[in-house]
Length: 67
Image 1 (cartoon, rainbow, N blue to C red):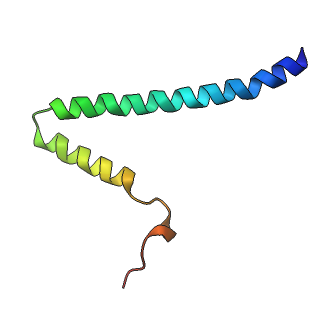
Image 2 (image 1 turned 45 degrees about the vertical axis):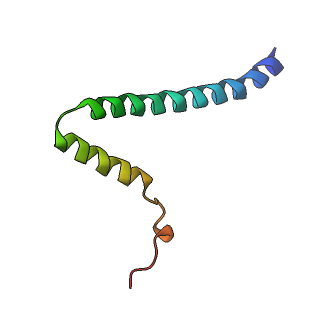
């Protein structure tokens, strides 16, 4: 039975990883819908800052040199 567990263990880890990634992206979508329906401009500004910061390159070498 050990071989069966060794077969399913990596598959279970992969399943959990993929499922949690989908769940996280769903949470962002729900938050986006809440932000869209909010009448306050402050919330929209903060959302745009959040979106820009997540789209920014994370590696310092990816930035062009400052001249």
